[in-house]
Image (cartoon, rainbow, N blue to C red; front, side, top):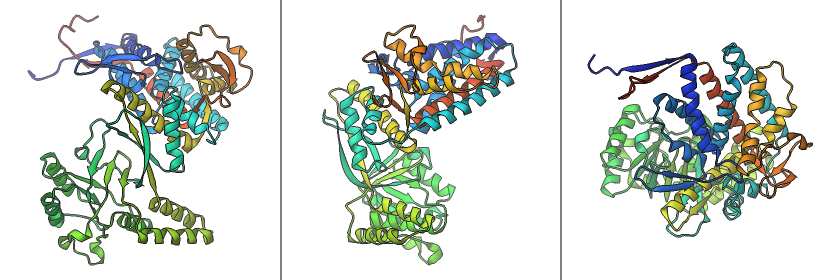
Length: 520
């Protein structure tokens, strides 16, 4: 019992009040950054250095509250924001604001059925998302500039750089971020391929800031059959270590092999990363063959008689750089050779005659993989503080632009959610909790711009709103004030999820801190 951790218990309204107090504190800090007239936040990092930012997730991550129960509330809200940025790349501030507003609207109904409140919020969430999908439009023309500019906190210069980067890779290509040694921010195009397999083991991570595994000039081993024993690739590992090369393995490897490789990486014996091969079928074979062509590797398959034990150095490929995140890997490859160009021509010829939908889709994917380009936005700044702030904004903008291209856009400035609240029919009073809450982003954006007590009745047309920079009434989409549909949907879903979870909580148990025994 001497090692047991003593717990503090809170119940009912007392528990919810403390949780909500933490949520309110976090929301007040984060919401001040929302909108074109949002304010910067100055925060102190772990080393005591000041950081100035308008990035909502950076502000949220910096907050740890003294009261443990309040901190639990703030942490729950941060989790909703994190999930939003994982799904859509942006929208953390909106998710935070919406979750707080839902809880605030529901607080007065605390004595009523929690189940009815939860079901009302969930039903209204589905209705709002359906409305947003119905009013969304695809990204065309200079809308890509507008999305990127808004997501860089209205920096037209950075917005144009990001938009130009997407245009340079035909919008559907890969755009990524790197830090530059120079003060100037620009982008460049490199040969590369995006592969939809990501990190298999957190111990392979080399960049803790971005949680990615990055290898410079790695050797590439591609195996179609399963690697069941680390001794099978012992010769390859020894060759990489002897020649001081990192190693990227594209294969299905046994868990013991994965653990052995991770342990060798931790000990500093070798820089290595493992990503899965495709799951099965013709697609697996073609994908591995394409990756082999692009890297100069030979696909090894023991099921067809190859012997992994006898792999020769010339069967290994290489690339300029590999970057693996949670869900994908990007390979910076050398310029396409004649064999690759020949295959590209062959696939283009097939596409001209192919009629079957599946064949067309597979060939289009293969063509994109073989002829892929990667745009790298190189972020430059004059100081570490400026670099961190600029990098956060550009990262948000790249993600938001991807989201807009993927699912389209809706009117920005909180107007899409406001219009949803004004045009959705209620089936029960509990749905009104959410419909009132979704007005909060619009209200906070106006408040941050110094516009108080705005009469919403002045907004006569759907999609009409306030340009907080000029103070004029405008059509939001025509004026370039837009939000990616995916970002708005994700923020709403995650906000509703965390809010209903908190509303259904009646007991909070936390570890007892020193001097907390007298807590009331």
